[in-house]
Length: 302
Image (cartoon, rainbow, N blue to C red; front, side, top):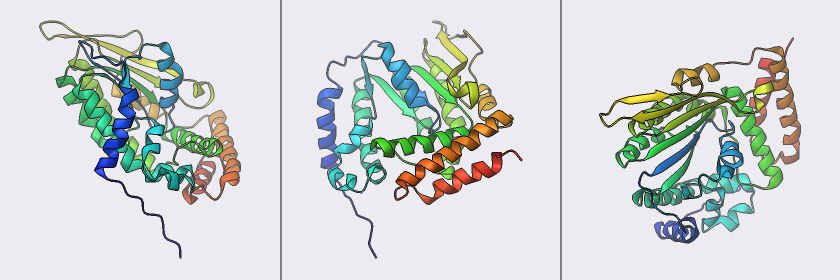
């Protein structure tokens, strides 16, 4: 019986990876009087990375920012060459601890220098809720973009994304229903921490979008609040649309699949994903098939 490979790394190798990354990552970055943090948050598969890379970054407003995580950072693992021989999913899984340590060093350096920061948050760790207070103490102004969608939509989207990554040989992972459920349970505490932080530093802003089936496949702006603090400490909230609140997010995530058109789309997407899974059957975890079939059984119209 074959055993799974065992990969190791040392603190010195984490530092070496960080030192290699920082030579370009921090090049030309300068501290600002009021440091800023751009947070793009949402469940896995909600479209937060797409929002960041296709909409926010192309606006050219974030050139003086440090991005805390990129998939390429994983390739700095000392045994990456051996991992990738067993596929991108294997390499993603076995570089997770390493890349968290590397990103932690990037964060510590950027935060210590009060550089502007870009952070992606999938609600996959409750630790995200403990970060905002330290950031506001350091004077960070928050610009938070939250993509809301139902858990079912995000889960199927995450499976489609992982299948695409197998086609393109990109580093990614399949997210289980249990992991998605855990992220959903973390979301409220994390978002309330982000909202509290936004209200603590004048000029901060929180924006909420909705994604889903049908016309909601493209992002739709649902709420946005800008927070201004006067010299006496009083807070003014202005909103170009509906003001942001967690309840607004709650309305989105609880908008379950009821319409026949949405049910049909869900069933179709699951069937297409199952068909694509056949091409990469040796790499696709068993739970993916089970989850997709479960969605079909739940949403098929009889």
